[in-house]
Length: 203
Image (tube, rainbow, N blue to C red; front, top):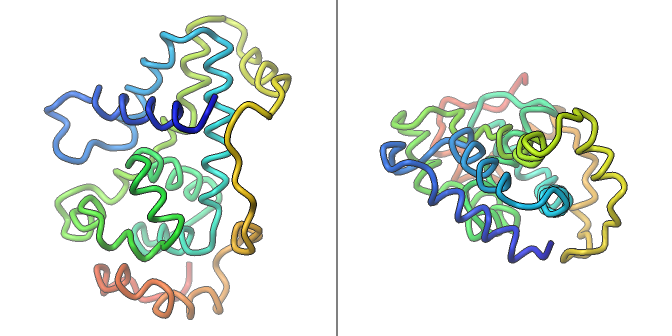
């Protein structure tokens, strides 16, 4: 699956969320809509979507976005960061690309601003449902619980667009040291200004 088709499916899922969900539907709502849309595809296409999802999500494995998750949520863990990355994907391609390029640009996103103002739940960006939309959809095609992951591992990973890794892309994925905390005001000043009570310290 090409990355353009991947993002088209994300955008369509966003459009599928009921209007009464409000201006900023949660990642869970988008994930449910995405799973329903993927379930209409052949099983092999669902697997292709998952492989493309993994490539896109990997681009978000950066220090700046992990620090942004901490600022917005007040804590971060490996699982929480995966949910946060999925939530960023759920915001759509433009927002995701801006965040990958400059994590501090999230301070300009209306949903992040609404979260900071208390108008939207801070965990609205948690999107485990997007991360697992493909296996959920695949389950509607087969009763084999392991079938999706077996099919995913068996599929060659050469059918989509791929970016060359940057130096920051190679970040280890760890976050939480005193040095990390000290870097937040320097690297995410606009985002931190939205959360003045989020003084970097113990995680």
